[in-house]
Length: 270
Image (cartoon, rainbow, N blue to C red; front, side, top):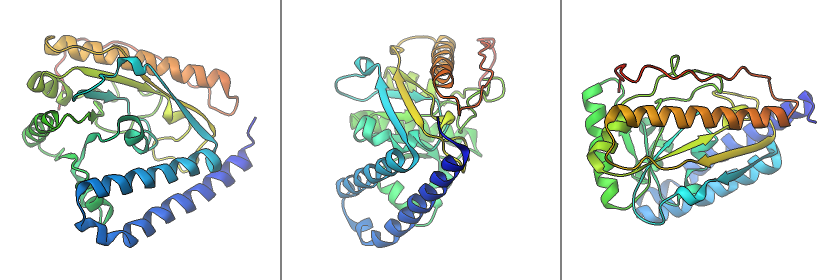
């Protein structure tokens, strides 16, 4: 359906336009760092809409949303998502309006880009210190829940390959701490983004990304049951979404997708 030379050329063109435009925007928009957060939010949504235009018409990547009925109609909630690509991070404001995101502290330190990111009021964590990371996550989640903002966290803590197992990239305990301390429901979000925009991938492949919200994990469950339910739902559904696309697009690699549930008694790192 799509030849490798065409995919390569489209990827090069996208990378030049996207990263070039991002660098220029960060410089041109420096004066807006003094503006209120709502102005920065509007600029961010405009930037992401332009990025979507490039992703659709240069890369040939489209997307759909399934399971919207599981999203709360109002108020804050915890959104626990698979993290396979930069693609999903560029869609968070389109999906949730004004989310806050749990992310590594290093991103805030990137010149200019990090300052704009910080103005959006995210939850940065120091991954080198377990105690400090837990405190940042819990304090940030409690503050954002009072502001009625969706709280996005990637429970595995980093981008993972589509066929990575949870033994290779285990889920970390931060999401459980947030759940216990805030009393908010967890909405799992499965996806298949890594097939089209891989982890640290220069080459992006055309196709149809699927984001699927799954039934909520309601407040009040024991920690171990929460983690087990989250792993089972996210891993199984993400594998099904990936297989759906692999069957549809001949240019995608034929990956071996498996999910083996780990011992729910095993301790989780943060």
